[in-house]
Image 1 (cartoon, helix red, strand yellow):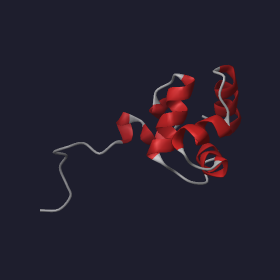
Image 2: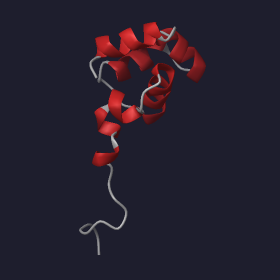
Image 3: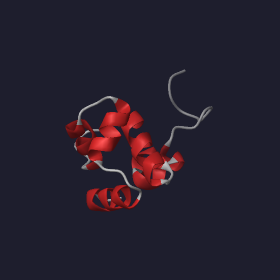
Length: 78
């Protein structure tokens, strides 16, 4: 999801960057950097997704389950 879409959905849900930051006890720029893809944080991403009522993988595709490593997958260290 693009940054402007995330901000749109936050506004529709009655939230903004500052409200997410306040909820997490972090700075607004930290939240903004995650929204704009300049930084990544699972905790911040999950808070944003929860605030807009969407799965984290739908808002931030890097956290979609299809891209998660599978337990017991072949390959890796022996």
